[in-house]
Length: 247
Length: 271
Ligand SMILES: Nc1ncnc2c1ncn2[C@@H]1O[C@H](COP(=O)(O)OP(=O)(O)OP(=O)(O)O)[C@@H](O)[C@H]1O
Ligand SMILES: [Mg+2]
Image (cartoon, rainbow over the protein chains, first blue to last red):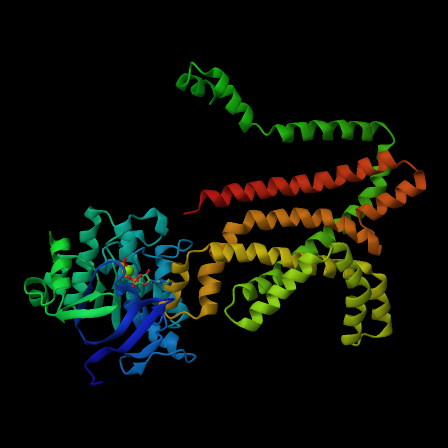
């Protein structure tokens, strides 16, 4: 099961919040270079699944394995794994007291122990890549939402992660800014980055996703290639959900 | 500025002059007037000699305020980190500390410091007789320790409020990059939290400046100590305590203006 091509293995993960079963025996694997898209109604457990993958939320049972290393609370392990798993949040979560450059350099210096000059060089090339090299000395509040999210992506990429997790990266953005973020994500996907994306952006699903997973009530209802899930959904709940978001 | 406000609202000049009045720090004007009056009577009347005597105490008032505040800032931060910690031992110890220190009058804490903590400390450090006597006679050391330990509890709660006001996503973003809890605290949470509580921290500096007057009870020769000496020597209570109050007010007013300045600067650059 753990062959060299598997980057993420989620094995039988459960998570409760009080009486609410947020994740109900979820299992899946993500291969190297694969782009997995997770869709589902609000409260279905999409964010919880992402957060369990890098243990921002600790599963009640089940295991998560990243590139052969089982994630758990053992000291050292968790931080090492998280450094290899980039995460992009719906509300960006840039550090407001730091410049764009410092946002991207901080973890490189603290976690990867890179010297400042090397971290800066890396940050420059990443800002180039996400298309805002001129903003490196700005503070996050001085940027538009789309620019902030692109900085957040650059910040995660700076750790040279093995996989990137995106939790509704465009849903806090004005429509005219969604494309600039999606374009960056598309580039990443085409470069072969392994990605797990929670999003309802159909354009991205069609152009980049290898696999779509539909979740409801903490369960994986069905998964398959985008064409199959979108055009020939097997389950009624999937059909109902798709009819709502596709109108 | 005035004429422009009138242009915008020509009909309601009463309102605009009212807002002008509200903008003006009237309290400050009154205070300055009172200050000038006091200053006048001081320089003309017998206040001058009283003031000259009391001013000697200002030095120790300021020194013990600064030292105990600095110590309280450091101890308070450690306590605050315990208060927000998920480590049960750290959390409970810190909470115990805060509850005890906030529940016991500062005056009693100072008595403890003088008669329990300092003797205990000098035993523990195994000081020689000479140093030991020096410490005991120099009650300012006990005063600074006592004030600092008491204020650490208040400052800890200020820090804690600041730390808890930072959105949870900030810690998560830092941890998701692989930073340890300590790294995230130091580089992401605390810098933001401190900026938010800077005015509150400043207010506690003003408070500690006033509370140094309690040190008189353990015979630290600060301002109030000198005032009491002067009053019992001359029986001029009204004049003496006026002069003391004037000196305290001058100190706290200067600090208060400083805090306002910091407040304005930090609220300008917030997100
Ligand atoms: N920390 C928490 N404490 C309590 N309940 C939580 C917590 N986090 C999530 N939940 C609950 O767990 C369920 C799943 O939440 P989750 O955020 O994973 O849903 P989601 O699919 O991401 O929804 P959305 O599309 O609204 O983001 C929801 O009912 C939510 O209220
Ligand atoms: Mg969510």
